[in-house]
Image 1 (cartoon, rainbow, N blue to C red):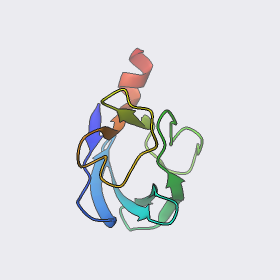
Image 2: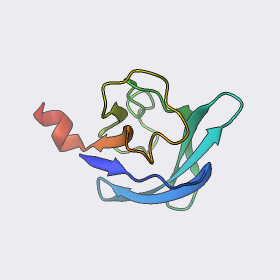
Image 3: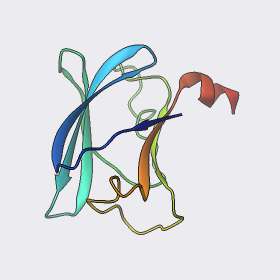
Length: 109
């Protein structure tokens, strides 16, 4: 499994390679609603999906098949067992982690 790194910023881009394909992830914290969203772009920064709200217990990729997304699973893990909604600093404090399980890891389960 791969942990997607977070930056100390309410709006940032993260370049990452998943399943041998480069992607750009855009993360934005919505201060009015108090939640994070994620966009996934291809390496040319063309949008694949936009505005996915990061929630505990929700898999983000499989609900968007056949649009060029990685074939594994992406979800937020709560490292503490706390089930309260994700706050702005929770990724940096490592209370929660955005995690990617490769296609091979998913198939092995």
